[in-house]
Amino acid sequence: MTVKLTVVCENRVGLSKGLVGEHGFCALIEAEGARILWDTGQGLALTRNAAALGVDLKKLDAIALSHGHFDHTGGLKDALAAAGGGRVVCEPHCFENKKTRREFFGKVIEVPIGLPWKQSELEAMGARFEFVTDSLELAPGVHFFTAIPQVTEFETIEAGFFVDGKDGRRDDDFKDDAALAVVTERGLSVVLGCAHRGMINTIRHLKSRLGVDQVHSVWGGTHLVERKPEEVEATLAALAGLDIDRIGTAHCTGFFNEARLAAAMPERFTFAHVGVKAEL
Image (cartoon, rainbow, N blue to C red; front, side, top):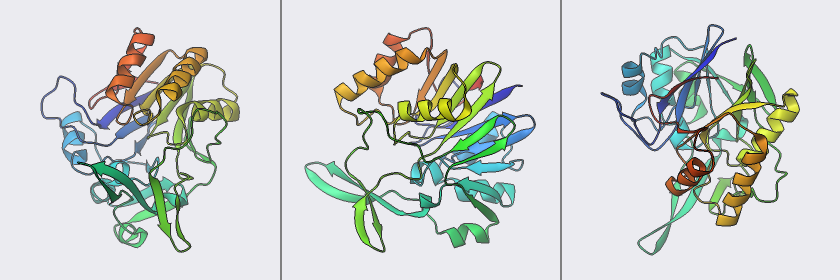
């Protein structure tokens, strides 16, 4: 079975013509005739990059969301408009009122970072939401997983993310954090959004649930950018123990962490920038 990945939106663009970068992530997964859009970026680059890459947004079998942040869901309206509506798969906490605290020039401010639109607005455009609280096979060999257990000691959720809800304010535990698991004869490939609940937690969970030992590749955002140095070191050690054939990092990994990954596994590392195509 052949499964193809094309990165449509990401912070960076490789040597190309007509493509643009934005803070966010989106990839097209093609498997056995099924076409799944994984996230939608921030909404500034989706339609332009899709056209330049030959990605037909009118021919989507599903849109799957990794979590409810704007930089992964902001292009959802454009994707729905192009497709004339369609199936949208996500964990129900995607629609929480998500915010973060950030320091700018010595001043701490609160920034709304959640999904930009209400469910009803998207349904009016033809979105058919399918809420998943554990796992779902989207296409042959392509699985959507959420409910990622946090079992490692070094992958705690970073401070500064919170939710304003009916019962008041609480820290965001990212129940909506999800990943795609692709199983082929090469082994398991994992496609991440941000991995807020931990890249290693996610990989280990998918291996266990699917009964696959070999990890062929890992793609997407890893959210190492805000982790402490000792947590990054522990992550690198855990990755070395997994014997991954290929790792393509994106978006929220952080430049210095990507440099460390490239140094640690020079023949296996790549950037998952806009325009990258890979066979999983």
